[in-house]
Length: 154
Image 1 (cartoon, rainbow, N blue to C red):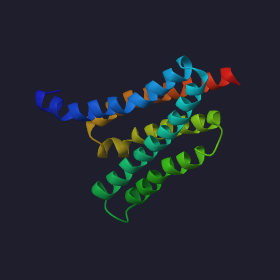
Image 2 (image 1 turned 90 degrees about the horizontal axis):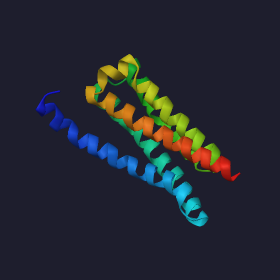
Image 3 (image 1 turned 135 degrees about the vertical axis):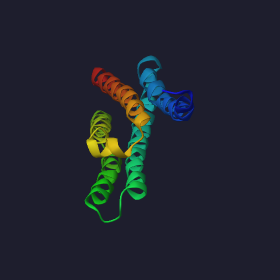
């Protein structure tokens, strides 16, 4: 990667890493803080996860309207896919925390699989794939940590 390319990727990298902060803080807090604060950490974790998952759907809405021709199969498919994360995230907020965390984790995994398909790889910047793999891996591991903690409590 050239110095110019590194400069362009620096801000998305830092913002992506900053976005991991609440996941990491909440996951660690669910183990280390007093019980009352652990419960709050899990609640905040699930809410933040739903917000971020919905945001990822918005990324693909933006890709469709900016890179695909309206009315084409690719345009229609990407718009349909773009609403799935929000449609998973919203009802997850109404479930118990183990189910919510599991559904959100699956949502993060599914959107990442979609992003790795050929048509997505052609429309997304090259640096995006590596960044999203890193971020998705950490997010899924945090969800597994929360599920494990809740299972230990139950």
